[in-house]
Image 1 (cartoon, rainbow, N blue to C red):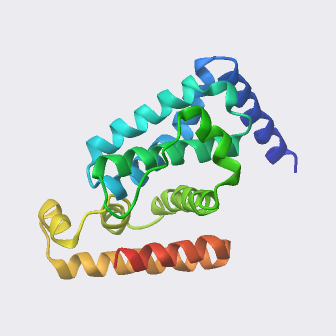
Image 2: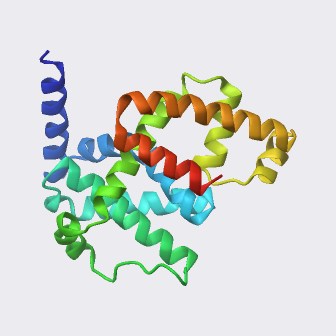
Length: 202
């Protein structure tokens, strides 16, 4: 019964390390969020190398502004916000504009931004998906990662895996159906986010 409390205390200790300039704190948050952030950035930039560079820079910004990291939720929100802004700057979208704020101001705006909840749900969804993918057949998991998390289209996946579109559709459908069943039982907000994700990339 006390295990979640001990885990929460440990996370808070890493947060304090980060605030005090101990690199162990930064490394903890990199382990926790780096992979999900890269998937998130890949979905916008469609370029894994660029996504990795952007995420690396996001952690540098976190380190520079570490004294403002007042909570774990603030750290997660900040990382996703600066990563998203950098990705949108990269693609130079005509439909999306990044927030024109300095890094210090971003910390101040985190709690008041209406889209942070959506980003937090997406963050949690990616974390849960990655855990569940390990339980799927390897081929289905691989196709799902490439299609939904890395933003590759069917033809690109066919080229990489040397297979047909029908095989990709089948594997993707099986993986998505299995994940929907899991998330429907777990959390309605995550289930809704998964449905939105599948609609966008279908």
